[in-house]
Image 1: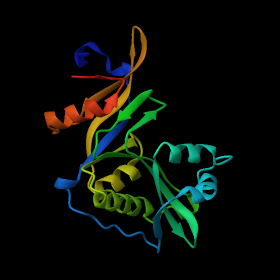
Image 2 (image 1 turned 90 degrees about the horizontal axis):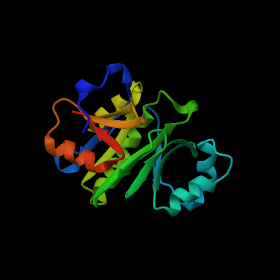
Image 3 (image 1 turned 60 degrees about the vertical axis):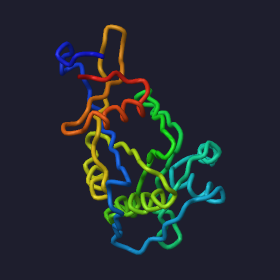
Image 4 (image 1 turned 90 degrees about the vertical axis):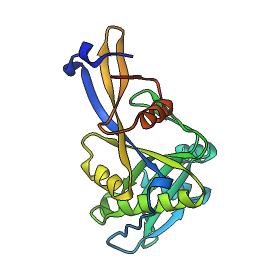
Length: 208
């Protein structure tokens, strides 16, 4: 485990933060968008429309995600996809950091959420999170993870409104052997929460 005192601050690049929500400690929330939205769990039949909304050339990647067991929740305005978010229940690779999120039974990881440009400013993101969380709560899950880039203030605000708490920072450090991912606990988290985060994130060094 590297000691922070042995690593120059200039060698650490903060990428983002992993947030957590525990259902038994967080009340159900209801956040409404500023316009009527129809929320639903997208099925295979939505793959072409969802691929188009995601800016993909075809449906291959979307279909692969469904085959892996991922869920996708979408919000429609006037029958058009306005926002979407993906959920994984086992493991998900974070390519830009070369990390893997490994989930235990009863956990979920929310990722690749987006509001299409034409619908931004309508508070769709916090409403999407609230809908997803209520669905996952009803399915009997116990804990949910989600990540946010360091400079994505809007996403962080939406996560806070939904009841998420920041648990660990994630970034890249330069070492003698090359670039490595690191994780570091946020102030005020418990040792148990830190241990859970370390179990969930595979491939990173824990900084003290």
